[in-house]
Image (cartoon, rainbow, N blue to C red; front, top):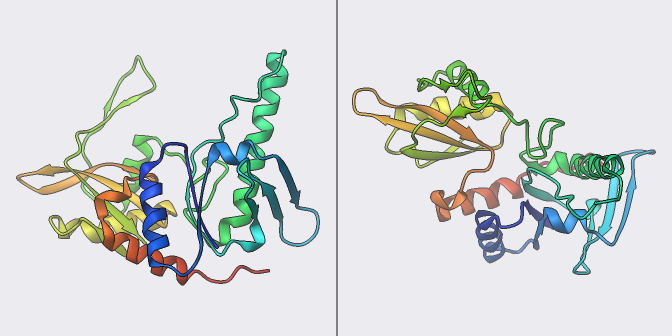
Length: 242
């Protein structure tokens, strides 16, 4: 079985799930974060041998880590709004425990996941725009200047004219900026991301330059060729060590 894990309302994930099902023959299940955090029964073993879990989702489906052969991981948070108690301290504790549990579940699936979990993010490390810019420069990409505000911790987003999607060694949408394709591949490898969206700012003088990156690109911009390549990618994932 393959899993597509996503946040509620992730239409790109639903599009991918439909495309993978059409290619068959491996069953594909879509599970969003609210289903995981509202499971009606869960068992999680981490004491002996490889960690495993089995959970019954609210719709009755049983999700067991041993049955999963491949995962497209697009989770970014564990919804815990239903864990509200009289005490703020108790509510915060319950929310932290649920987030840790979801991260541990994802770690069970990490060997067969496209975009593995991290303590800094459920589908990979969260990075600030400045951190992405440093990685991009190290990958050999021209980088657009960042506008930083001394009054706010946020960074103004650079304008985006084109987004390319990197899956392994394949870059979708890079036909118009072929000179940047090797750098986009190096950026994904440097970020430890199997799947990465790279935003570009077009420049009449120099072609294009890096404007941002995301672990959650809108995969629909890559079209059916991405579905075909993702199907192949999942099919060729190595067997888990258990």
